[in-house]
Length: 56
Picture 1 (cartoon, helix red, strand yellow):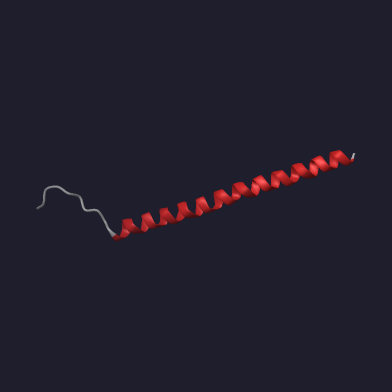
Picture 2 (cartoon, helix red, strand yellow):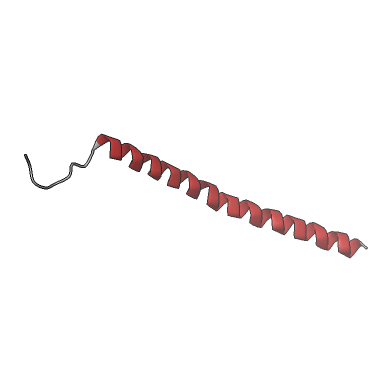
């Protein structure tokens, strides 16, 4: 019985470590993606693109 509890505890610890590791990668990636998207959206408003073609 002691071995089963030990194995389950070890499994819980390993699962927790890998879950935190995945969040440690995913959250900064999402933050940087949102920052890049917001900067791109702001730059579209600051520098509007005028169509090139024939002038009046």
